[in-house]
Image (cartoon, rainbow, N blue to C red; front, side, top):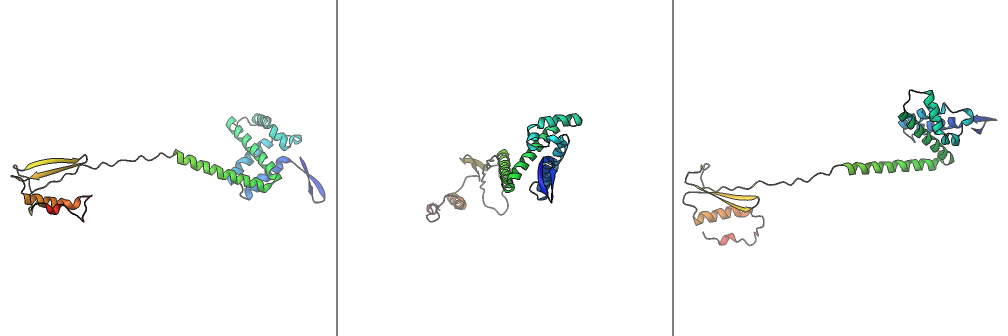
Length: 215
């Protein structure tokens, strides 16, 4: 209970009423969000309803929250223990915030904003840490098969006499050649080399070596 100057007369204002006014004020100024204010006001109104007039003191209430919880439990038997625990926490936070705000409103609001910022950073860190790391999928290229056949205007149908040979040039590449009956001539081999030469990935175009092949 405190005495404040009100016009030309002194008025008695209960500490619990001051706490409720404080919560309404910070809600109106959007210092705390509407949902948080609603939850705190509900908890405070319920527990303050069992505070006797001579007990209406911030320090007394803070020191006897368990007693007030017990009274309210007896008064409202339908309220479960989890709700009572939440009420106690919200009333405690409201009283402590009011005391801090009463001494230095700006310092209290700065601390509140710092706490919010720290909470947001912590949530983002947990979110990043909880995100499963994408596993790198190694793409395995299928073996490369090259079929060489005599030149023709129409697609060549392999003849029974044709000979198919296979050369694994590396683990992921297999060169397969379909030779005509009787094999290739040197000229045909040279044409084949010149045909494949541009596909060499480590070729030095300035000094080609394939030009010295026999024709």
